[in-house]
Image (cartoon, rainbow, N blue to C red; front, side, top):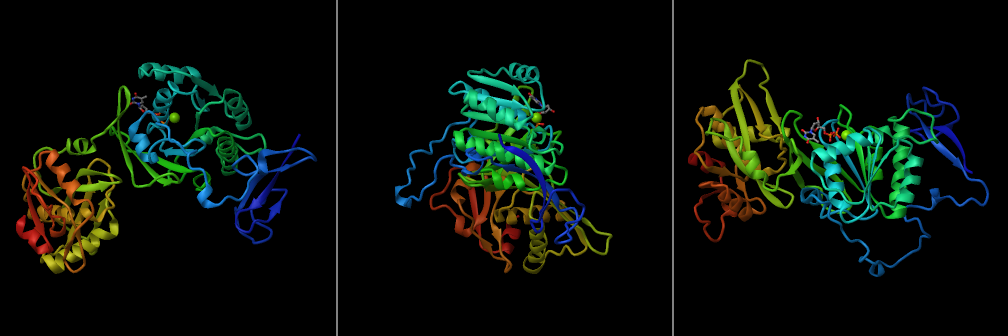
Length: 454
Ligand code: TYD
Ligand code: MG
């Protein structure tokens, strides 16, 4: 049997001591010593610990001889989740599901697992809830299950042993902060425990080809506990976010080894669990009632689909020596830049005004296509006059006051037309070759042209 010992390793310089110390003896860094498991192998024992992820003897292969047929994708039972994962689950991959407590991480994974269990065996390991709680929730949500096993366990060695016997194709561990390894003495949830337990789970997934979801609560400062260590270990990191009192939930990938990271999955939390929102534009615009001053609709691009969202601006006389510029859901730096362009090339001064901007529905728009709509919202608020009804605006604004085209103009316009918009202001370069029925499209090449149109 392997002898388990722990040592303390300095995270700055890597020096080791058998005992914890507040300051590293070598590099004198403070609070840098972290407990680490140290497995001494006895002679003849073949441990899986050092054989690498593949779990088998490694060998060099020519790139053109790599067998790609082995990476099939499985549906997760939820198309919005598949979308964020880049097209479905990859066998042997490890996905970290992060988010604030109570946001719905357990719910989305329970719903997804129930769907998958109709086709293949799945295992839900929970260290937070009892089996009864999980089962009751599944029943209350009316979820049909197939080969669905449950395990309440927090010791990682037990989890992998049980999973080896159960042989699930997809496994969920909820949550990593409750899991501990017997190799370390520190309490669950600490950096060392989280890292070591996760490492063992990742190794298990890679060696058995099990798809593994690991749930991780996000700490207040936004970092996954075990500062970033988990993010490096796993194949994909998904964040589940949304306003706590709101019903809308957004799932986004911040890292994905098997797909793009710019996809956004949209869900709504209802009494019957999470519902997929296949048509997000409709839900973001549903809060939009009569036109009010300071509001503009932009057609943005999220991953592979267009989305209509409302941008609001409030411009108000400032009494501070430094006027405020606050942006929620928009790029902070960009708003200052656009105000300068607006002053220089549009003749609209805001140096004595506080400017607040917000994207409705908790969405983040980091695309430059929102420039033109943001400026329109600012002008509308400044004049205290609503923009025309059924008007959609998109386009990037350059420092010289020019309006630049953005990718996928045609699809953005089609999306607006689908939702009943009648008029569009877009960059000249985005004018479609064929007119779109029912949509009056104005192409502009300078900021001033748009201001004249408003
Ligand atoms: P949960 O999945 O337990 O969150 P997490 O695992 O991220 O901590 O979701 C908990 C919240 O979701 C809870 O506060 C209530 C709400 N909820 C609903 O509104 N409707 C439902 O059908 C379910 C299952 C949960
Ligand atoms: Mg939970």
